[in-house]
Amino acid sequence: MKICVVGTGGVGGFFGSLLAKAGHDVTFVARGAHLQAIKADGLQVESDSMGTFTVNSFATDRFSDIDPVDLILFTVKMYDNITTAPLLIPLLKPSTLVLTLQNGVSSGDTLCEVLGEEHVLLGSAYIEGRIKEPGIIRQIGKFCRVVFGERHPGITPRVTNLYETFKEAEWTVEVAENMTARSWEKFIYIAATAGVCAATGANYGEMYQTLETRKTLLAAMHEAANVAKAAQIPIGEDSIEKSIHAMQTFNPTSRSSMAKDFTDGKPVELDGLTGEVIRRGKLLGIPTPVNDIIYSILKPLALRAEQSK
Image 1 (tube, rainbow, N blue to C red):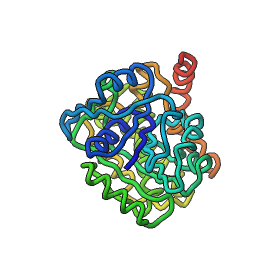
Image 2 (image 1 turned 180 degrees about the vertical axis):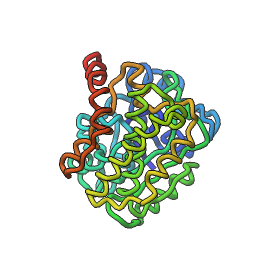
Image 3 (image 1 turned 90 degrees about the horizontal axis):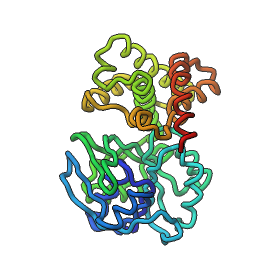
């Protein structure tokens, strides 16, 4: 299979490397020092779940270098969606699939608008991973999986075929009957934990163990769940409980990727997470006071990071 990984960070770098290791023709799109290190020495993965290995695949920062592919793993940060999605058009064949493995719930809509709904699949990656240094992806912990499926309910042959490809590449993977609902269930978790983690500077363990902070975290989750229900997204009644359980599976000393980006002064996904809860809440008439406060605390820092790019 001919595959392009657009965004060779913790998610794209890890799962794309497993596909390359399994013998697929994978091209990695990366930038700067990370790209140069991959070109020179390959892409190395240091993984708690899969061990350490290196793949020597083609890497570039120019989409004009890439011929049409069978599959695109779309794993850029959400704030790059609008500028990056149009660059994928020359990579498409009629049968090309574009699987978004991003945070948030808006990326699928953006990709459909630009590329056409017939190409787009939704996915959620549950992984703690990052670029350790240029050319090296670090995956932490044994909890590492992908859930994916169509934008509309049902399991199609193309999803089943892709599932077999991922399994053969040693992904821990699941096909969802209703991926839109599953995406929202992750969104409820990730928007709340990312926002509270960034606003407090706490790690996962501290957020859960500190009573006052846990109350804020739960309130933020409930607001996102209320927005989903108002949008008639069929999330499970146990979505909040699943979110708390998911947080407890991570290393208690870890922090959300958005919190780390704030610390590092990098651009952040605030508008695609907390901001998206607020935006959809306003459209649907659902109050989101806790998320409003979290957003107001973090927005000046997000603007500062954006201006310093």
